[in-house]
Length: 559
Image 1 (cartoon, one colour):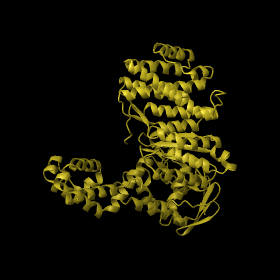
Image 2: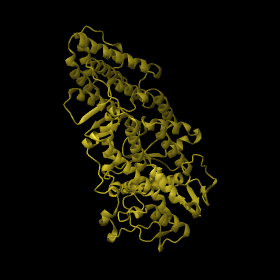
Image 3: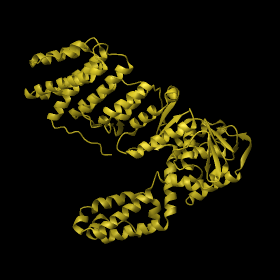
Image 4: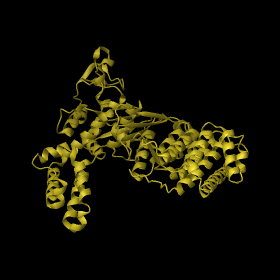
C-alpha cells in the first residue's frame, strides 16, 4: 500500500485530481472507507490517502479522457464541419450566403494554428480563399469533407495531441510532454506512470529519499521541474539558483504522479485562461468535496459568477461545530496561465458563520445585480463581483473601492481616457453601496442610532432618489453640462471624507435651485460611515438620471 499525505496547495491539487480521475468525478466518496477501484483498494484517511498500486490498472485511459474533456479541439472542429456541411447540403443558397462568411472565418480560425491537421492536409490541399468559396461553395464542401476524413481516420492521434497541448501549458516539457516526443503520448504515459509503477520497475536512487514525502526512494534522473508546473517559479532556466548548477530533484514515482494530476483538481474559468483551486488542510474528503462543489457550480451556469454561489453553499453547509475551524483554514488559489511570469495568487480567508450568512443574504438580493459587471484597464479585465467577494472574505472592503469605480465612471463620461472601458452603470454602483453599507453595519459596528439594519436600505434609496431629483432640476434648467464637474467634486469630498466640503457644495446647489435640503444629510454629519453611504447614494442618483437623459445605454457583457 502507498500512503500519500496532504502537503502544500499544489500537491493537494494533485491528490484531488488523482481521486477525481480515478473515481471519474464521483461525489459519494467517504472518509474511513475502503473504496474499490479497478483491481485495487483505495482508503481515504483524515489527512492522507492509501492505495494499492493495482488501482492504476487502466489509469492512463482515464487520465487522457479527463484531460481531453478540458480541451476538446478535435471534437469541436468535427462538429463545426458537420454543421456547415449540413447547411451546404440542405439550406437554400440564398439563406446560406448570409452565413458563409461567418462560417468561413470560424473554420479559418480553428485551422490556422492546427499544425497536426495542416501536416495531414499537405501543401496541395489548403483552405480556399473567401471569394472562391462565395463563388463556388463546392470547394469549401470539399475542404471540409477532407478534414472530416482525416480526423475520423486518425482521431486517437488528434485527441492525444490535444491533450499534449493542454497539459503542456500547465506542466511545460516534462516527461511524455517533451517536444522531442511527437506521437504515442498515451503509450509513453502508460509506460512511465502505469506499467512501471504497478510492476515496480522504475529505477530509483538507492540512498536518496523523496523530498516531498520523505518515505519512498527518489526516482532516478528527475529534473527539478519534472512533474512540477512552471508557475511554481523554479525551472531549468534558473540553473544558477541551484548549488553546483545541479537541477536534480529527489522526487519519488508516486509523488511525481500526484503532481501530474494537478490539472484535474483545478477548476477552469469560463471566461479567461484562469484556473482556481480551493485548498484546505482539514481533511482529504473536505478538500475533495470543496473542489467538486466549485467545479459543479461552473457547470451549472457559465454566464453567472460562480464564486458567490460556491462560497454560499460551502459555508452554509458546514456543520456549526466545525465551521470556525474549517472555514478559517480555506485558501483560494488563482492561476493565470496566460502569463507565465505571474505567480499564483493565494487568498487565505477567515470566515465566520455571520459572514457566511451575510454572503447568503446578499447573493439572494444584491449580488445578482452586479454579476457580469466589469471594467477594463489597459486590456486587463476586472470582474467587480469577484473583486468584491475577495475584499469581503479578506476583510478589506471599504468605501475606497466604491469611490474608485465611481471615478472610473465619471472619467468615462469625459471620454478622455481610451485605456479604460467600463461595463457597469450608476445603478449598479448604488447596489454596491447597499452591500457595503450592510457590511459595515454588521462587521464594522458603525451607524449608531441613526442607521439601523431595518431602516438603512430604505434611507439609501431615499438619498438616491434625491440625487435623481437634483439632476432632474439641473436638466430642466438646461444646466446638465454642469453635472459631470459637480459629481466629480462631490466624489472628491467623499474620497477624502470631507464632510464640510461636501455639505457646502450641496447647500449651495439646493439654495441656488430653491430645493429643500434632505434632512438625512444633517443627521449623518457626525457619523462618517453613515454619511459616506448617504453621499454615494446621492451621487449615484445624480449620475443615473444624467446618463438616462444622455441616453448612455448600459452594455451587457458579451464574452
